[in-house]
Amino acid sequence: MRGEREFISEIAALCDVQHENLVNLHGCCVEGAKRYLVYDYMENNNLAYQFLGGEQNRNSFSWTRRKNVAIGVAKALAYLHEEKTPHIVHRDIKASNVLLDHDFNPKVADFGLARLFYDDASHISTRVAGTLGYLSPEYAITGRLTRKSDVYSFGVLLLEIITGRSIVEFDMERGEHFLVDKAWDMYTCDRLVELVDPLLLKCDDERLICEAVWFMKVGLLCVQEATKLRPRMSAVINMLSVETSVEGIKISKPGFLADLMDVKIDKKRSS
Image 1 (cartoon, rainbow, N blue to C red):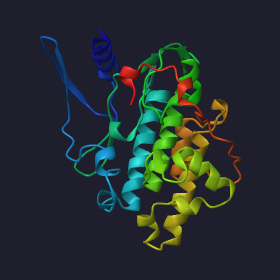
Image 2: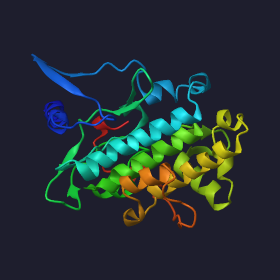
Image 3: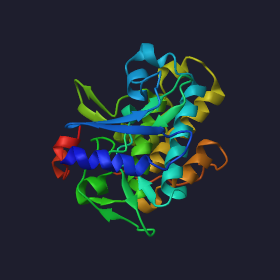
Image 4: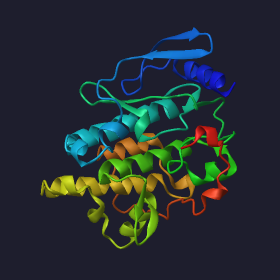
């Protein structure tokens, strides 16, 4: 029954969307209990497979390519949140849901958890679903879904793209630590540059490194604990395109799930 709802939800969300950074839905097929959706073929799989699969994979992701992926995903979300009517909240923005075409252009996919926002609703209350690590704390704990929930997920994704790190890592001395928490610690002691992917630092390009730190600051703006302080996705695009400066903007503490037991989540749909 849940799979049926998600199948219908994805069709409803994608049947009339047109954007260069969203997958194109060509059709669907029902065969007994099986449900299929037909999309464009993505030659380069997804961002998690190609980029987060290890250093060898990341070698193929130049700074230009990383910028293109980050800005492309931001444009897709801005379209869903601000241009499409009714507005659409994706609810599961993460590396594995960003598909890559022949030229590594990003296409946001998997709208099975998407929700439509009618009549400019500020939020909707829904069962929590998504992927731990990308879930905004206020949504994970209360079930109150807003467009800023997607903004939080995008911020986590952006930090992954710049650092080359997974959202959760294990250290023998410290145990589990989260990328968002680590980025905040480094920001507060003015050492964000140390989090830039070493493969980018090898370029020894001062302008590139400054841009990478800039992007991480945008990521931290997106994951702030207070939802009202998180920027809209159109503003994020302006920041990533260096049309709006992040210098002088106060970045507050990120939202963080100190105890995953607080998450009211349907475990069948989480990972």
